[in-house]
Amino acid sequence: MADYQCDIAVLGAGPTGLTIANLLGQAGVRVVLIERNASTVTEPRAVSIDDESLRSMQATGLVGEVLKDVAQDYGSYYYSARGTRFLAVAPSSRDYGFPKRNAFSQPLLEATLRRGLERYSNVETLFSHSCEEIDERADGVVLSLKDADGRDAAVQAAYMVGSDGARSMARRHVGATFDGSTYKQRWLIVDLASTRERLRQTRIMCDPARPFITLPGPRGIRRYEFLLHDHENDGSMTSDEAIHGLLSAHGPDADQPVVRRQIYTFHARIADRWNTDRVYLAGDAAHLSPPFAGQGMNSGVRDAHNIAWKLASVVKGEIGPGLLKSYQAERRPHAAALIKLAVRSGGVMVPSSRLNAWLVQTAFRVSSLIPSVQAYFAQMKYKPQPHYTKGFVSTDDGELSIAGRMVLQPLVETADGRHVLLDDLVGPGFRLVAFGDAAQRLLDEARRHCLGFHVGRPLAILPSTTLPDREAAADIEVVRELDGLMGKTMPQGRTVLMLIRPDRYVAAATAGLPEEFADRIRQMVAACNGGDAAT
Image (cartoon, rainbow, N blue to C red; front, side):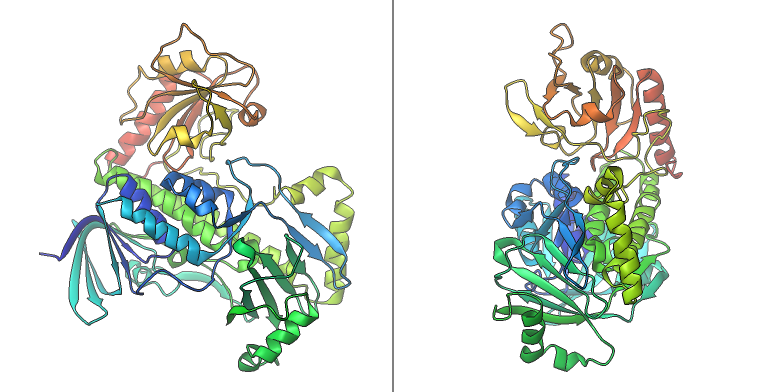
């Protein structure tokens, strides 16, 4: 008998593993979270958290606590070697309910997520435990552990998620090839406990002589990142004298207390396979991104939300194990797209020569004269949005092009007059949601058709100018959109029916017949129950 028995074992308690454990704990699944270190991290690491990740924090029920330690809604200003700004990225829209760009402290985030696990008696944490062996069997996984005192322990689970970082033991077990590149560039990170810098935005100096970035953080902290030259020695460049010289040359923070100094190289790698039958990879175990787009940790949180609800659905017997085959099909293409974005962004931040810098920066200045192009960059429309065309989605929604995308999160007004974000009403499971004047009646008709698994109470979202239909079924939850977000993107004059997944992606959508809509969903569920890939 194993010392610990659970449904899901999670190896690695970074942001990805902690998010998975919180979501599974919320779902009532038995979880053991294993971490070789004695605690969550205490030094700054990742510093950028986007709107999609904050939405995942909202799903864990911890976003209020998380936001206390987040500097919300900042942009990035790009400067030439002469100090002239040639590009401003300052997105203002909140499509998913939160600002697109935010700064955070990884130690504070991880501490919040770890405290969140205390809410669940079905989650057990094993810190100071290293994993020595992964034994995968037909009916589950057994992990052989060793604690800080050298004592052995074993965890038996139905499934395992390896979120154990760049040197992942789980990735070796899966037998994945880590495709991509490791770059020779060395960057010096300097984290400060305080700052005199008055610019709240990220400042990116695209100077071929010494590219550097300085980023704001919560509670008045700040980070500087300097590109090192080939002739510069690691030891000398992390000295107090060298750091003081760099900070003196590039801002007002030369005398601020240094919390961390670290030299790193970066990677652009992605695993060719993300799972076996019982072991799944997530976060840095599955992909490594250059830091230039600020998406490394955020991609891991997307993995966490995607795999967590699928594992919960399978172990609770709601949907068959074929559902898990959709994980890599959905997540790998988007993770790869963001790695490519980061590499391209690095080409702007680190020009190869003065001529290259002039050409790139002049192109941005000229493009700013065209409003649509300026908005493309300013509003971060260049960032690839997840769009699942394979997986647990039905893309046969004709002109809508909604299925497989993350549903927008408008501010809505409830029947009792409260103003809340949509997800606060959607809850953690599947929901049938309709938007439009006839949302209540369409949902009443749709719920008469079996979908093959349980969905929550139907939710009708009415346009801001529409009052509830008092003659419609009383047990359908009705809200009114306040900010016009959905109204701007949905077809005018038509009511749209959607099945929203637990990770806030649209599994299926239609502006047509509910019967055909239900039939497509039943086919998806049947494919999972038969063990075939859901496509």
